Structures are given as structure tokens and as C-alpha cells.
Length: 424
Image 1 (cartoon, rainbow, N blue to C red):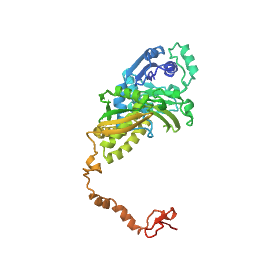
Image 2 (tube, helix red, strand yellow):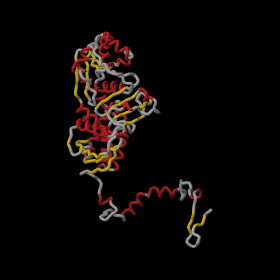
Image 3 (cartoon, rainbow, N blue to C red):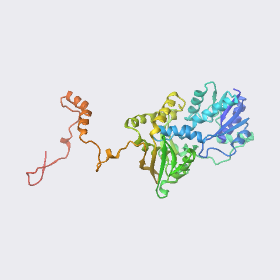
Image 4 (cartoon, rainbow, N blue to C red):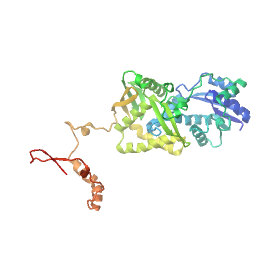
């Protein structure tokens, strides 16, 4: 190993990792910092990397690409891990892994590095994605193979080497943030019985303290949002606007005990106002524009895409195939959804679409009903044929345990003046 490209956040861990890699492996270190929004980019990160000993520092603004090429495919698929987590961190990892590989190729590096520990999901996501894109690259994780200093040890290590490190209050939590959400863990949150303290949250107000409810309208084209309250917005601008608006109404908090890829359960707190609102609106619009069979199959696709994204398999052939399927089927998911933001909830209250499969004339029970009620008799006869055939094989003996003998019962007989006659 002669040159390594390090995924660099500009924090204490990765700043120390630059010097540690140089000293332990006698290698040239190039850093890569990727801005994926949400406040993830630290000021002066390039200069800090150089002060730590990096020969070159790349700083890439990938916010637009993150939303369009990673977040939107997950929205089209309706992908939520275990039905709860919008996959904010998990979606950013394949983007960062791909950029690590591309910078390694540009620099002629023979290795890449990341700051993950040996206990979390991210180490798997980075390692697997990098190897999927270039199996020849070595993957190094200093925190997993011996760097492992305490916070105090890292500070002392940096000061001894005159490394510029950010001087910040040590958070009691482990936090990852990007445009699609905040992920918070550790500290008191490791006890799933403990309610999250107020200082866990940064993007959402306490729902009890939220202002009066408001209604908003999201416009969709081809399965992804394109406008808010009548204004066309670019992807990054739209997500940022929704994060601020929905978060101000307490929408977007997720408290979830999930199954980590490495085999343990972990209590995680997420803040994802835009993601929660967009997924709710998208699901409602799908219900209006997709067929019954498409919706049934799409539930399977959503679970598969959510699991595989969480597991770091973004670059698998199956996932590429499923993303292409959802892109195709979602061409019909167009229209507007109206939602009510009310003290922590985002409730769909209306939807409309030029590609709607909803036919009022068929659905209504009022004047103008165009449904042929007489045709229902034949439909029921054909639909119930297999069940009647099966019941005939049993000579009328069903699988239902009799209920009537064990239920309180009164019979009203019209010939008895007293009216109610108790029965047995």
C-alpha cells in the first residue's frame, strides 16, 4: 500500500486517522470530503486535512446527486427499513464509496480508508460497495484495526503533531447527518425504556409545542416530488424546505429498535421531516394511480430495496434491476397530495392525479352510479367457485367452531306479548 484515499469528515477521529495512517503504513494520504447536506460539511475541512498531513484534499458538493441518484430511487421504491427508517445514512454510503473509488483511480491510489468501527453497519456498507466497484483496492479501517484511541488520547495525539482539530463540546451521542435525515444513537439512548431527552433533537420541535396545524400540497412527477404549495423546486431546495417546515410542526421523529446487519439490536433515534412527509404523500398517490397488482408487488419491492440498501448492497445486480423496475412503473405516479401537519403528525387529507385509476362514477353510491350491480351475482359465483368445491369435498363439514352455543342470546317472538324470551 503506497497511497490511500481517506473518507474525511474533518472531525477528531478522521483528522487523527490521517497522521496515524502515515505513521503506521508509511503511505501518502489523500482525503475526500463529500457534502451531502444537512450541515454535514465542516468549515475549513480541506485546510484541516492538509494540517493533519494529507498531501491533497478533495471537497465535493454531492447534494444534488445524493437526492436525485440515491434518495429519489428509494422514494420511488417506497423503501423504509423495517417499515420505519428512511435510510438516510444508508443511502449516503454507496455515494461516498463510489466517490472514494473514483478519487482512488484519479490519484492512482491502491487503497481507500474510512473511519468506521468494527461494530456498526457502515463498515460493511463501505467495504462491500468499494469491492463491488473495484475489487483490487485495499480497504483500511483505522478504528477497526488498532487506532482505537479514547477521545482524550486522540486530542493528545493531535496536539503532539500540531494537527488542527475542531474544539467542540463532546456530544453524549453518536450522530450522523445528511440532507435526508439525522441518525442519533448511544448514551442514554442505549436503554430502550428511556425516553429521548430534548437535546437529542435538532430539526424538530417538541410536538406538544408545535404551532397551529397547516396544510401543504406536494406535487409529484414520475414518482418523485417536484413542487411545494404551487412552487416548482429543485430537489435539494425542496427537501430543505420540507425539513424546515415539517420540522417546525414536530413532524419527522422516529424512535426505532432495529436489527443491525452485524446481528445485534440497536435503539436508534431519527429525525427526517422531509422523508416522513414525502413517503406518506408518495404512498397515498400510488394508491390512486397504480393497479391492485402493482401495489401488491411493490410492497415486496419496497421491503427488498429497503433491506438491501440497509445491508450495503446498493451496487448489486438485483438492486439495479429493481431500481429500473420502479423507475418504469412510477411514470404513472403523477399528481398532487394535500397533507395536514399537526403536532408531530403528517396526515394525508387529499390527493388528485391526471393518471388516476379512481372512477367516481364507479365508486359512488349516489345518483350517477355507473356500476352494473347485476353483474356482481355472476362475479361472486365464479369467485367463490373454488371455495364451494372445497366445501363440497368435506360434505358440508366446515372448519369453523360453532359460536352460538357459547354466546349470550335473546330471541324476540312476535306471538309472545312479553316480548323477550330467554333461550337455554
